[in-house]
Length: 164
Length: 216
Picture 1 (cartoon, each protein chain N blue to C red):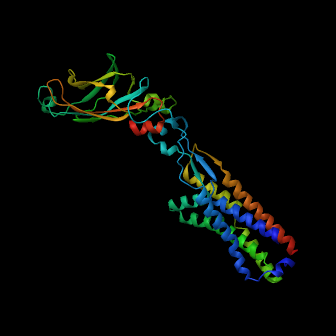
Picture 2 (tube, chains in turn green, cyan):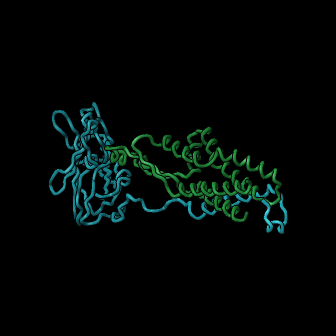
């Protein structure tokens, strides 16, 4: 269980970094008239870098509360709860029934978190902020977040194998 | 799930363990915030570090020069009302360097205070259909290379259908100018009806943000 707990700790570290680190940079362009926009409204063409938390903040500022709350739950709260349940599952205080109940909860929570929601968050911010002519590329935070997902999957596999 | 090594440690409620990942996340987030997430004070990639945007002019450097504002007295050189008392003058200015007219502004109708932007673009259908417009075309300013004791003359006129009337002309010593905004106040005389000239200078090769800040 020590190895599993180390993996959970690492997943937690990567999750924290993945949520706050730069994840996506968007560089707006205006085709042949890019230089013109640069002259009259240069701030419109500044490259903007978002973290996942930044995406949620942006949605909140855009008064899109529904999406802000949805993304908060699925990309922040849900992964944290999942890692917390993993930790409890590794506790020596639990009986077999409690462990099985815990794993059921984990499986349920896991359906809603991480990778898909992460992709959704990126797509939403691209579509909402800069339609047309802009380019977007992933930053190091995206890879750190992916590492968190991978470590979390490894923990789930280890717990499943222990259970069986 | 119970390992032999765990049985020696004090037993804590299992739910307390749920806080450990949360604490790790908060700790790392706090550290990240403290160490990395600081305001970006790096130099703008578009900034040209070799160009000064304040202070005196540098000999050998070429500058964009234009009048962002010209104010004229309420009466003309003959102390009469402008345009026979009907309207304020239609103001236009020219910049002369080394005896040559190097820039002429557009005319600002019926103004005692006329203002111009150093940047403007007139787009028409041809532009939309693919004609290219360069940034240089958008800069409405004279290009003057500064040397010691360099002078530039500004000639201000009241544009009329029949004939243009002089409002005044003034020779500016470039040694007295600095990069950015320069105000020159003048007194009324039989040869001058200009009250104030606001001249703006920007080194050529400045980045677009500086161009916008000083020229628009």
